[in-house]
Image (cartoon, rainbow, N blue to C red; front, side, top):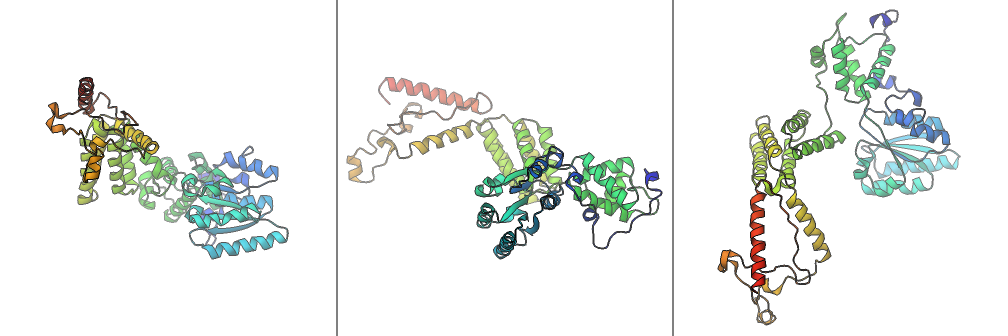
Length: 440
């Protein structure tokens, strides 16, 4: 590869301009990694060809080209480009931008307003875009790293098309690095293994890959070529990482939950280790483990909740790194425990029925009679104190009379719930017998 650059003089960096900015694409067909949007048959390419550009939400991880594509769209369609960031802007800034756009429209030119980190605007601020979108004052392009379904108003989403930007694959990152080498007139001083590590370090972020390339060129001595180990020492970064406030956070916690539910302790430990290595809050993980204990194991192993709570307390007491072992131990325990969502399903069913019949009165037999009037109305009359009955079980019907008996909890025949089922079956038998004797 060195021969490709032998005849070229290394270019001096432009003061104050990072490599990523100097390599910013000038046309949509130069954008890499988003061919489903910008390729010959891409959604944005078709939109431009139709001559009509609607409001959009660009959703995707950092460094995938959202800002660049928005700027190029304005250029391709002849719209004036305005950019604001929700981090640094407030209502006053929005009003100024809207007024400028109105003035521009009165002069015959439309405005593409690019809003970075749009999910950081509150609900009221998001609603302020609606009238200027509807009357054509602006074409809104909002960029977000968060799931729009959760972070953006339904009214805003109904007026904008969501375009999903994908993390850059290794071959797309390689294209960017090749462009950087051509721009600099020199190859990256990396051996093959180190170059592969660099691709993983970028973690789908094109801007990060170019920033890392700059760091490598700055650090390299004359004729020096970095190995994989030396590369990690130079850039002080491990691969891959994720931002715990972004999509990767939810993907990995979902993976951890499903591997525990699927009784795979090895895979579960892997995802736990990845999240801890990436800087996830261990107490967040502890809380999720408690949730898994009650949702996916429940009464099949009542100790699961005890173990999960104990791990939370142990981490709170020990901290990092000692407390992480308590979380790992809990992950193994939960993954290898018998599974049951019977309690979860029973509660969901009970809630649904309660919403429908929430006004039904409990049977008077189980109501207290603290006043003479209530006693005269039959409150508490005929109640049987279970401890005074055979087997400490009276078999009375406790549901509202208009409802009749219901069954919500159906424990499986595994784990501790096998014993619970035996008890329920025994009580059902007694209830039938005593109902037949007229004792219920």
